[in-house]
Image 1 (cartoon, helix red, strand yellow):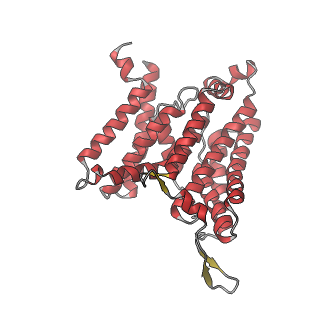
Image 2 (cartoon, rainbow, N blue to C red):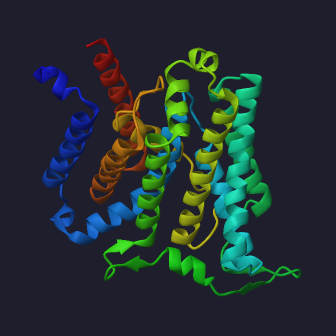
Image 3 (cartoon, rainbow, N blue to C red):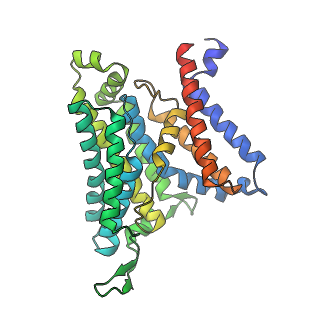
Length: 328
């Protein structure tokens, strides 16, 4: 293997991208803020929601698709979980499964339309993105679902935050690791095992590589596609629950643009946007890269507009790198 081939390997590329971002953090550290452990702990916590979304996005992209609805599904789940847990006082064992079912159903609907009617994933998930966001605003009445509950006479009363919210937003290991980070690592490990060590995962890779050849080989293309989008919706719901717990409310506007970050994480990790090549393992490195970029820009007071533009540039650069790698 030549030096060029070694440098173009997805693992090497992902590690170099992370190393470059960390080097930038050492230079633009804003009065030493980047060198404090609390900064890295908060980076992992904030990037975990993106990482959970990216795990689902990895499966979809491996299958040759795309899901633009994950941010809106996250918001819909956050609103649902907050209504059930805060306003209606449902216990965690009831509120969590119902909230997870919301995202899973959204994913199943998108997957069924894509697989059975063979409509482009971009169009279907774009429609689901608008639909889920509209549902989130309708269910919440266009307002944030917080501990302030409006009574029939228009007055507000305040209720306590459910224990499950505090538990998800808590920290472990002496306050050094957040529960949300543990959720992300668990989701990443399970997604990796499913995609890399199961027959279902091999089918996902095969469909992304060549759908027609997979169909002729006896691979159940439609059921696998539906299950991939259902998994993506489920993980978006998990991210939505974590988001609601972190914000201590259900915001129908939350998650806007999160699909962009999830796609950026996946392509930085080396998963091909054409499908069939990649995996969740490198998505973990992509999560760290995007997370540190966000944190470095944040501590240096770069406005959100600048962060969005940089994320767009990163996606284009990663795609161009993949294209060059495929030609090599």
